[in-house]
Length: 112
Length: 112
DNA sequence: TTGACATGCAGGTAAATGCCTGCCTATATG
DNA sequence: CATATAGGCAGGCATTTACCTGCATGTCAA
Image 1 (tube, chains in turn purple, orange, blue, green):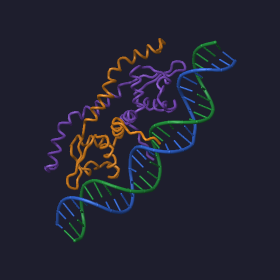
Image 2: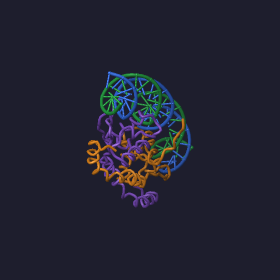
Image 3: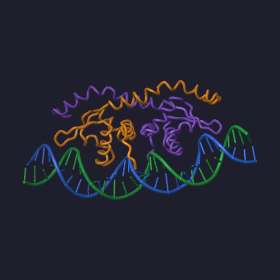
Image 4: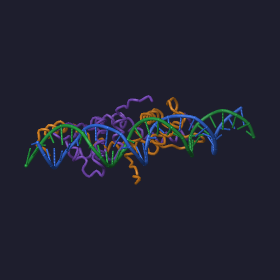
């Protein structure tokens, strides 16, 4: 019923949560500005399916496209990736060392 | 039909693609070793639903848990996040500067 | 103009996801 | 022991997702 508006982070992570879409990003990294047809080549799925995947990447703002004649050219936008890093990776980088000590401390029952 | 075995990256990104699960990670960062009950508090969903979310985080190896008596204690594991960063963020960080130039070059039709 | 080519659009289906309710088990504690 | 507390397990339902097929549109080039 109540439709929640998806946040940016949702869109980006969801977009990345599929191997086909990550493959598409890799292809664009290898050579930016590919057409839709080039991107879909050898993907082992119908063009229309790949198009949907590209749509997801565009919705997440990871890819932007523009037309040139009858072609659609695609470009990577790395900004959302960096934002994800700042908010969801960097923050937790320090956590590793604490972990073992925390586990011990808590398990030994000094509690909370 | 043919069930594909999900890769690590799939599990991690999928786990992160939900605001409830990200909230859980934040709660664990704020204080590691929380019990299930503590984690679920105030989450605006049934405990069982939150438990499923925690299951997704565990499947992605972002959280590991162990029992103490009748309680289940949860701990962050930041390693998968770092791996994601190495493979899927760092790689694309350099792409930004190229982008505008690429777009121009391609649009002006020197083609591929 | 006309045919070939690149892409867009509209459903349709099977599986996965996210939430629920109901009930069971195990551990603590009076 | 009896009860409360922490958590586990099973099944059900609505929505979303990831594919597909079929057809329409727009652009280029002979």
